[in-house]
Image (tube, rainbow, N blue to C red; front, side, top):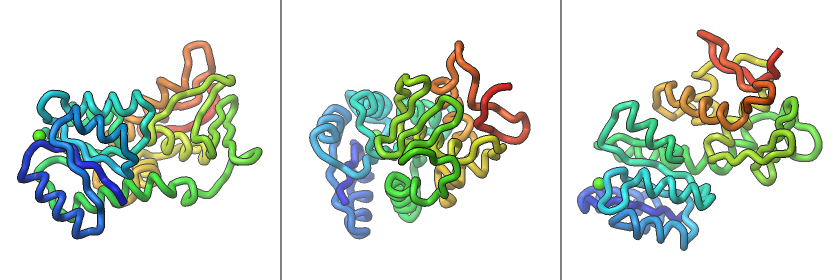
Length: 234
Ligand code: CA
């Protein structure tokens, strides 16, 4: 299992590297954003651990650049700044999860396992409800192809990040049902994901912007005080 660590602080690098090596991971290190971006693009890593504060190009910019290149590798962002605003900026740039420094070894490992697991078998873990022809989920005019992991509406492709894809898949497998934030968090981010449900609102909003178009009926509905629901507007 090959992981890439993009981090400039030597003490953090040696701590993470040693601990992950003991856990059986093969860790490559980049000490700045530019070389990290290059390594991530040229190699096939299973996961990227990305520090936000980096010399030259910061973690947010690296993350954005990777996602722009359609790289879907899970990204775990490391931040010393724990405010919601910074977390949102990190997630907005395309990171899948974040960890606030200083963190415990066990927590880092739990997040990595959770991300790798989510990336591999989310689809298999959720029972199919609305699966139609082959591997395509369909709700109203919205389609999600489970093989190519691409979404489309009225035949127009909707580009999704890895997390947006999992969220949409979960909602499309549970249409016309109010899904609470906690339920979404548990099913999309995993039960060991120790995080505020705020992340659910952030991601539902991203998805809503992509799926709900001005000239088309809204599909992602907010159920005030309860959660979210995927259904056609009445
Ligand atoms: Ca740093």
